[in-house]
Image (cartoon, rainbow, N blue to C red; front, side, top):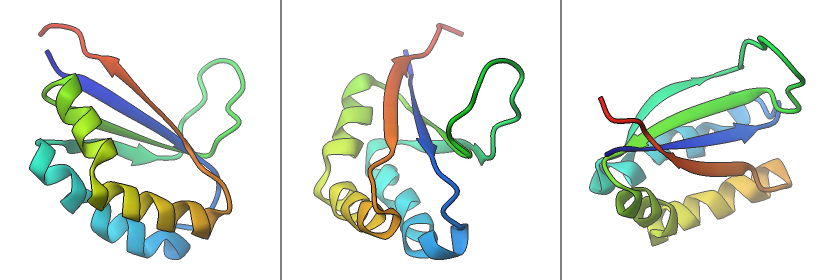
Amino acid sequence: MHYIVITRTDSTPDADLGHYLANVGATMEPHQGRLLAFDAPARLEGDTTYTKTAILEFPTEADARGWYDSPAYQALAAWRTATMGHPVTIAAVPGLPA
């Protein structure tokens, strides 16, 4: 089974988050994570109080948690939070069998 991690962020310009965007992929590699999507969501129904969504995939829940809890990602997340002025929403859900 695979795990999907969804992040929702605000309208902080990508240029301001350049350090984070340039380095987040390297924090996922040891945990076999990969970026599936990153962009502004196209609203189909309901309200969206965020302006960007990232969807990540990991082979297992342990890999997803290992990435999130890793010192490399936590250091980068602290930088991101300081730059944005607030944390983001990050959630993990199990993927469906193929």
